[in-house]
Image 1 (cartoon, rainbow, N blue to C red):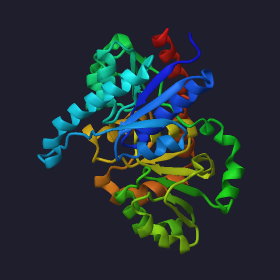
Image 2 (cartoon, rainbow, N blue to C red; image 1 turned 60 degrees about the horizontal axis):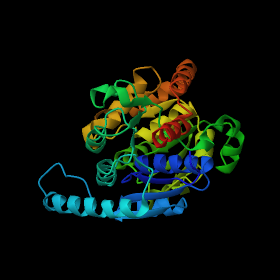
Image 3 (tube, rainbow, N blue to C red; image 1 turned 90 degrees about the vertical axis):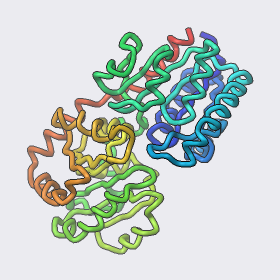
Image 4 (cartoon, helix red, strand yellow; image 1 turned 180 degrees about the vertical axis):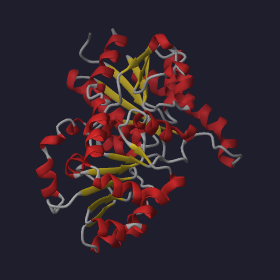
Length: 363
């Protein structure tokens, strides 16, 4: 295969779509240093900031999703779609990609639709156990559909599904060697258990309210907290940094060391987080967001819990959270079985396997 390949990657809206896309781009660059990679995202979404930070060029489309209720944004959707298809066509004509990759999100729809129309091979990467509308539509003409969960032939053509797992940051693959480094980095008391709380890059209001309401409980249990409250909520919760054994962060730049230092993890159940936590292999309590399309976070979490790899606490049952945590803290057998079972579900070679499929498409 030629060394100088042109690759378009489109995906965004949330970190769960952006970070897998960047991981795929990085692996392509390792194999083909001369590759030209162009991202296509949605204007005003976080990919327009995160992708350039990772060192890649990005073009923005005027596109957004359809709201569940009747709003002015829905009236504008047809105009945005026409504009995005037009601009995606111009981008493709100028860039001349050898392949187009979609990782989900608004912009990947028009980008891969135009690529398909022009006969350019396309690959869809679906992170969740329940696909979104965009990827369901794109899968009809995609050359390959790389998935992270079983039983997705209900939504996608079975002969094109490849189970690869989700791309994860490579620095997580060896976190068991970083435990000491993590505890020093976060200045933790090595005699106390540490709970890591992560609610996604923007944060999760319900989880933050839950942790705030249980600060005395955590003190009684003599545990220390690494609490990522998210960008939207940091100003509200940073005051708790004054408490002993509580560290509040807007964003964790060394996620590998946070995972390494933690004894237990409380997390949302976005696809990327679930894939990372399988590799991390620590006792995990999932609190899925019910406010996402098709309730896919609950489905993601159930796919792990059904194999006895995690505990689920629904937002409607948060009053049970202290009991769940206290029981887990006391039950070393349960801690060990959760760790072993979630770790067995890890697919650490996902990024490499996806790029293998991209190579086959280009060839």
